[in-house]
Length: 490
Image 1 (tube, rainbow, N blue to C red):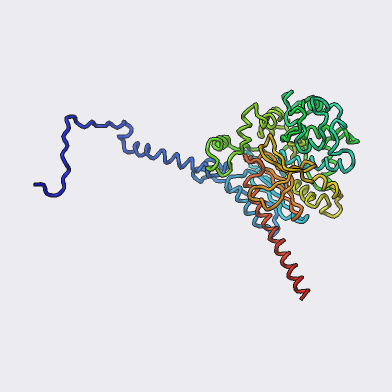
Image 2: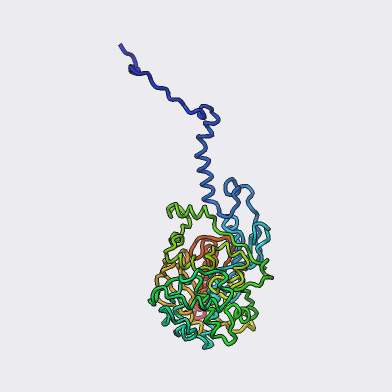
């Protein structure tokens, strides 16, 4: 008789085989370390991924040796919250050195600098620091062209061959200045010659290379971003029509610098080298991670253009890599030889204060914002240069874009869809934007590179806050006016 439940007896003709553990698992200490290793590595990877790309590794992983960042500059009391966001960019490890400037109704309300211009020397990134801003330079070049159009020296509708007869070869004879301004001149890339930095030191030699380049699309107008080339072609056109045969850089030096308190160099004097911030590229390991992991796992996924840039046959590679001098990546521009020759599309060395001043003048439709300043552009010239054209798909950037007649851009950025922004941005994250309705100007530059196509979270968070404050001010002013009007009519 069986009482209670008993385990049934099982008999086997074969004895149970004993599993022998590996020698390193027999030691309890080693076994625990082995079992914990995947969790530790997972934690390290997690900390690395969520932390800022420019924090020291010890700070990223265990929170030690995190740098203390100094922020200096001025903010109007109504815009004080922007200083907090600017500082957070450093605390989060997204910045090394940066500056931001904002104007509202012609008055500078923010000018901030922070971090270091060089991690080795720890020299502060301050008001005296200069920064290479890459394609943010294009707004300066577009402004020079708009001034030449106003003077009657150039016409957006005129064929380039009118000013530069040798240009009319290789199916380029019908290309207009306007085509070049909006990146559809058919010279997005140079493929009949490998560009060297030495090619840029002799303007006549460079002109010969440029004029011999065949149309990239056999004469068919095609929008394809002229990353480096637009500025080279514009420089030669300007040199030919200017009575003094000056370059765009020389014209900016002589006509904009003193008149508007703008410091902008397309060719940097050697004595100023020590003022230029060192460029730091986005960490390669993080770039690879963004290429491997699905976009929904990444806060700021790589734009598809970056995958094309490793394919030598792709249009983005030909335009952005092969056509750059020495096929250089951003870090190469820390060398002196890259600061000497003018590239009006990419070689501008300046600061956010000067970028902001140009943007503020354009936000005022080219009219002075300080007593005694000359007119930058007549309102007629401004309206022509900023006249928007139909949206068009860009074969290099893989984006549909809205250009203006004079070569600026019209933007509604993600997270800022409620406001139309005019201007341009540069590789790595620099921005030069303005809006005429609210008369705001925003300029940002930095030495820590990000991978976003046009601005990233660092600048966008500050710009979002700036727009919100200004809109609230306008709403408050409108309510006050309506209240006063109601009282008067009572």
